[in-house]
Image (cartoon, rainbow, N blue to C red):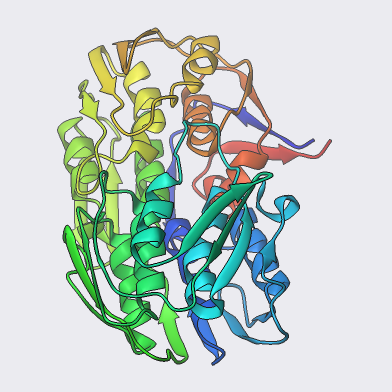
Length: 419
């Protein structure tokens, strides 16, 4: 099993390019199920999750051809099996996003209950309640969800929580439903707006993307599209935090600052000089004394839950006290114990971690519990004295494209070890 070795203490300096968004790419890959016409996706990140999604599409009758490092062409190849088995979905929570387009297109789907990172329950009942409103018959049997519908019919759906996945699933399903669907209390993340832009390019009529009320006029047929995936705002924020934790100077190209306002304001409040120019973000922490800043996670446009672990690592080395309050997931502090192994002074009380900052971190063997926890351990290792050995790094392969290579380009003492 591979591991990552980091010799900490080096200030990061240089320029890297932000990859396409994982959280946008996955539903957009699955949206190709809605048509037999050719779909071209550009700026796709090469990740384990995108590879797994391609394998799912191929199992579902699609032909997927990569045309360069970050583009692929998706076309119809064979009749779909109608079943998405456990062996393909057990590692990736986003596999449930196949349900909406498959149900809308083929009137039935049988999909294994999904897996993914161990960061909380993340129940799919919000998805299933929405499908029922659209007219689907839903049964759970033997670890599978089975859904059938002669034809989906537009409906008014009010989500009890603004779930990103449920919003995406229902928007895709509604795109081929009869009549108009209105989703209220919808999630507002940029990835949803990007999915709606792709669906609009395929011929869907959608209004309200990026707001809490999305309206979809169902179409009889959707066509092909060429679509460019938005930049990954979480990857970008992780590298900005890496600049801060090492006291370095990092320039990100190909970013989208408008998607990162909550994060950029917190990084600036901590004392990092942030400069914006088009799709370029510059972060300078060299020679600056950083200040403790508390965060409370929230759905977009609030501070993202996918960055709280990395923020905790940063605040561990900043002198002063800070807090991280997690409001999105109930089990997302598994990284606390591993950060403590590196010397971080952290205490947990229910959904809050209190940080006594200014710790002198020192390298140690640590283990990754989930994708963003792994990113936090990498950041802490960059700031720690000595060598940090990070195990179970396959979690990182799910969401960070060429993480080691990009950090090496910035001058980090980091390498991946096979074993």
